[in-house]
Length: 283
Image 1 (cartoon, rainbow, N blue to C red):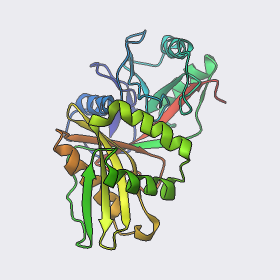
Image 2 (image 1 turned 120 degrees about the vertical axis):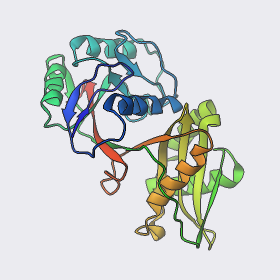
Image 3 (image 1 turned 180 degrees about the vertical axis):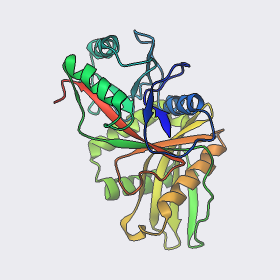
């Protein structure tokens, strides 16, 4: 299967051979859905050149939450200069903002086109981020088949009966700091109407799993999802995805994505695409 590694809303795309299934929708439509899913997290500033596509997630301007993609037939020095100009214009940085310009690529390191992008980046003094992630996406909602011993609760991010259980799972499963949650809360105040918190509760009253969804214009971004240790190995991650899909569907969602660095949940969507970041000043 051949798939594109640069994203955007243009009709021109770069092809890169990666593993995946035969997609129900055509490639351009699929990639457009993926790109626009990030609009649920932020707004799209106008950049130069216009072939750069970028959604700014408040207080989280980094390669995982605010990706910069290229809508063109190749990565050029002009694109790198455009990203550098964006970051040079910034006067204020939050703790989880990147201090360096970056551009996101989708595809395998071994792809000739990705290799060409690496060379362009290296020649311009950029480097490849050693960290890797994968983007899972779903074109259809997963079936919800939750065991009878579990129930679903959902609501707005700052709802009292949801905020504390969600905070507990974040601390237990991600070991997040108070500073992390402070920045996450500040971000949520900007986009809270699009956010829903979903939790799976065991009949004992314990929170088995919890996560967030952000929905806008028919697309949904799933994030901060986790399953607590005593409940792992029971298929609850998939059920947490299904539950968030069900809730976000009431907001109009019909396409879902999530990014992950967890090898256990890579390739668990309808499709999965490797995510690579090239960054100014990286080794």
